[in-house]
Length: 386
Image (cartoon, rainbow, N blue to C red):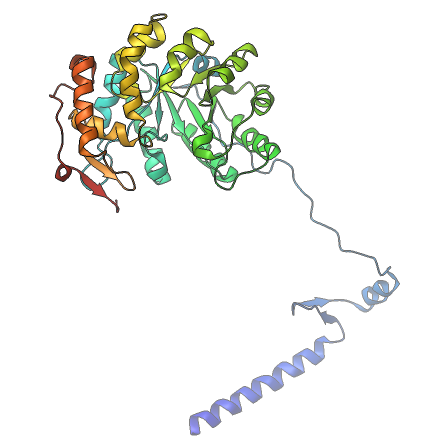
């Protein structure tokens, strides 16, 4: 009780002091609705009475281009847009994992080396096939930087730095180019879709940084990138081209306009290349048979080879990519059978089908040197936390 009385007495004394201070300030200050004092001299007070009731305080100046691009003009590993336009076979590379879900860099390096040995000219790092959607950005940049550091002089490294957030796409592209990637892959804003004008503004915000490939895959984004958007963006010298998944008629339209385009559909890439003018393909199947995919793209029309590979391509995409590819590479023994959820392996009957496809095409055409095998359900590790 004594402490309470003492506290109340102290509080009363503080309030009386504050009241006295406020009274002394009242002649030279007024208080706004926010409670902050605004001090005025008598002259200022008289002047304010003469102001129009419509008077407004001056606004802060808006500085255009406050955020300058974060870029370097050093030439090591730098690639021109024209260099990217010339690439014919680009592999959307798989990312392998250790049993705890971290990257298996030894297996990854082996996959990249197999691509280089078989004449692949570029790789997509952290794309849909590489499960960039399951990576943190720290993991993403580490993998891009590792790939450039180890292989950047032998193969072009295209980092998937696209996002449905323009702010994030700008930041990630700046950092991707800072660690040395040769080009960026950008998808249109997905899920929270935007207008076509907004789509153009989104791409224009990132395309000027350095060589850029735009990726159109409406089955994943829920929104097509129509030709007039690409035609508008083609005015930028940094547009390398388009990975197009809508079909070969769209590819023909772009090639007629002089726009570089890669087929995004393995099962259509032979005809796209030799019948519709596509520069080449950004391929999933080349993870498995890079040499045969090089023949499809480089060696001229070969409907026999294309027909031979179509059953494999169909098998790969019977479930959303990269489920089939992950299952196939595990059964070839070139990656550990580790899946980051929500991806899970194909069922046993489909795993048996893959072994038969390998025998039909020839084991020598596939990556790795182990015998292909049918893995049991218990052989796979599914990782939810990593």
